[in-house]
Length: 112
Length: 111
Image (cartoon, rainbow over all chains, first blue to last red; front, side, top):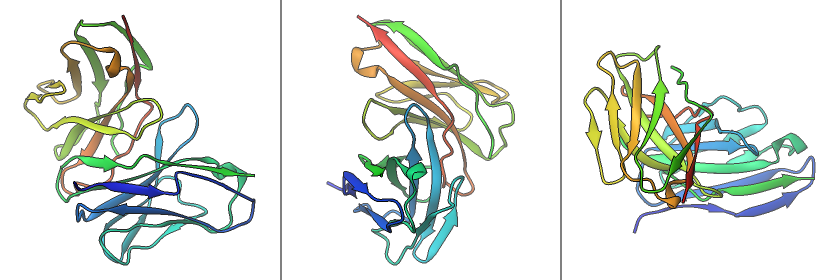
């Protein structure tokens, strides 16, 4: 079955380090998204991509970057991790048009 | 991005219907109304979506007002597993792309 997977599921890192969170989908979806969710709040869009070589900034993109070199993967990089980036990160993908989006199980990132 | 307004929380009794309201007075003609829910410690999951007509699927029904400025998600018989945060989202049909989440409605279901 097609799926979307995130790795790692949990990570602890130190302030100032570069961190990359992986997102891989096997649906061959063009659209991919990264969100963060802080405790007790809704999801906020960080970056998104509508296809290979396409990336766009979302609501809270400062301190984050993404690259889309193939259809299946959209890695999220924290250039220099800060304690304010401690959060749960969700990746999602969807086909073009108004179809449903599929979300990964999330990565819990703690910056100490 | 068009915004939606939902109640912060609602309560329901098990096996009774639940009507979750959403206001979207600034909706544009190309916006689709999507509903997602998030169970505790999980990623969001798709529930239903529609444009103008009411929609039904195995999970729920979506009733859309004639002027499209509001909609209601209907769970026909709530179960304990339906306890979750429900998000009403407007998604641009031209792009079929990004989903912008609001705060959602936290639904609790009492046995």
